[in-house]
Length: 254
Image (cartoon, rainbow, N blue to C red; front, side, top):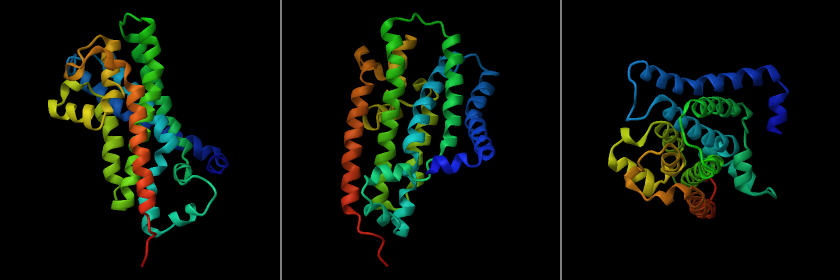
């Protein structure tokens, strides 16, 4: 329904998608401005930063397109309109994710794909079958991890009711952080996004294998292939949190 509604005004869809493309591209413009003054950032060259940027935003772009509307759950909890979803013969989470589905978010995916294409064309990497296979695995697993964060954030809003900005700190904020190499952050922060909220498995850990860089926190080499397992684990925990939050919902009251 939302796609048909969007395509009814094709000029508006084109302009909003272009706007999304340009707005997300400003992050990479900021990186280009940095490299107009320096040759490396945290020991990483511009193509290597572009590699991290492209992978992060591509994974997040697919997650945001599919499930990003879950961040609006708090509004439905506050005004009681979540009740209408509960009486429909369809999974509540699917309805929440489909609510106001925004096809304009394709702009981020296109922009990230272009940056990743530039990075792959500029990098001097000794490509092996394992590294080539790891590329799509990183995107799919990263998308799964971000989806789990979206669902966990939505589950938290059953309790907090007005926590969309808290959720954004871990979704949009985590995306911004992963655009830069782990060497520019403090060790405690890197530990936190590796062992507590494992965003590092979106790109930092597997990208270290592809780029031939030291692993964050000197992790063993095999963890580069762990993102699918991390994504499944995060999804299971997020699913449990969602079910617990949904069971605790008692409508808005008066």
